[in-house]
Image (cartoon, rainbow, N blue to C red; front, side, top):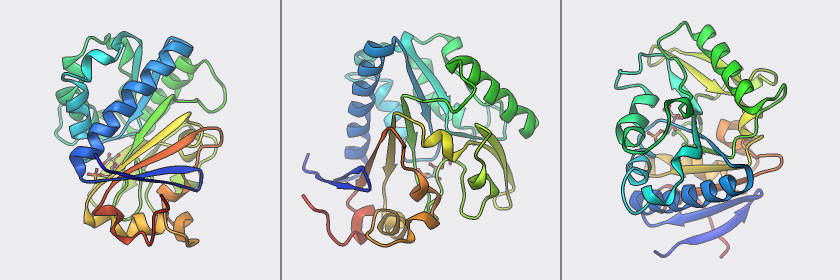
Length: 255
Ligand code: 6PG
């Protein structure tokens, strides 16, 4: 699987042939990250995203050969964001992960920390924050072992959208977000939480992402205008797995 790797902004950017290659590389990344974290801390706390890109990743992790390489009993699933819908709704990020992965692996219910999208957004965000604090036993910002993110055409990530006041949040761990279009509340982890992760893995594919990728990973100063461009873990690493289509606008990738 030919790929081009480069270092940019303390990120590792790997350009792979297509979406399938991205998701296989992400599955290997997940397996390795879980092994290292469980060996070091006897747990692997991962926050995952919704959207279409990572669906195949979740399906790969729920099947051989990847499934048996993960010690699921020591894995804790959280979400980077959630839509404010019931967990049975097709829009639910929990439902996406449950249908493609969670029901197929041997993981305790107590290890699945879903955001209760069916509840009032403020209450759901507050309850999620308390659950995260209980899990990490912290008063500050939790350190997830891995956060898996996507990026929209507008450079949003999780449910942090350009111009959103959620981007200014520096105290709360999770906040509600109201979107005009589509008319849908969401709940999202905040920038300080994403930037406190041990590892962040971005999965981005398709030519609709060319502009956002070229500005977030390009050499210009525009990156900070995009929420995804704000993600630069203080103590951790960022790995971008992008396909050739999405990388089309990158002037050069140093090998
Ligand atoms: C969500 C995701 C969102 C997603 C991007 C990219 O809940 O929708 O968290 O941030 O990662 O919108 O979505 P695609 O993978 O579908 O392009």
